[in-house]
Amino acid sequence: MKIFKPNHQNINHLKRWGKIPKYYIDRKDFKIITKDEILPYIYNTDDIETKVVIALAWSTGARIQEIVNLKKEDFIISDENRDLTISIKALKFGKIGYPSFSFDDPFVKELIIPYVRQFIEGKIFSRTKRTYQKKLENLNKKIHGDNIKKWITFHYLRHSLLTYMGRVLRAFPEEFKSWTGHRSQAFEEYYAPRKVDRFKGKFDR
Image 1 (cartoon, helix red, strand yellow):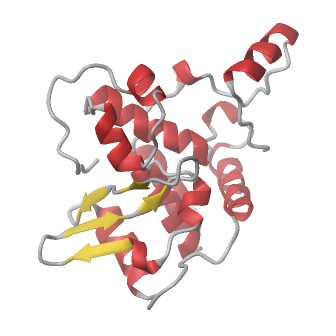
Image 2 (tube, rainbow, N blue to C red):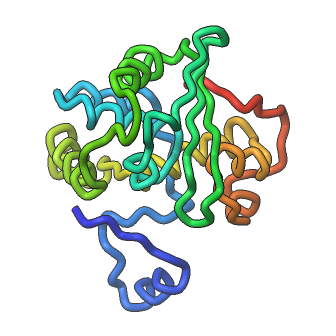
């Protein structure tokens, strides 16, 4: 499955000519992917790298290339505070996001931290983003067959996390920027309706 990266202009053009790919999901239709929905993707691969990449994509909302670029030095593991903070450099603006997680999260404690700790320094992923995209596509086929409506992409996981932050946690645009390193006003216009309760900067799902 090819990854379709639309913008407002080419989407309007495609709508006029009826050529939108069948696997394109309009922004308004993005939904929150729950842990129960992502777990089959973790369980159905024996490749530890792929497991960690999918877990990071679901947990952080980072782009796949941002995840592939991560180094051991980008992971700050605090046994004292029982938390993990990741420094993720946003591709579009070069700012740094700092998503933070508790050790209580099974993905963090049982999957991400053990994987990261086996490295001394430098990059922790050996493959390209295209390879991980292909592996995710194969998992989609294995789990959901030809039911493309249930397939997910790394881009979908990004929107899922940001939708969760905006619609469930009611995060401020500034908190989105701190989490992702992204400065786009789309956070304020779409993901972040006015807050009810403060987002604490760290969460478990």
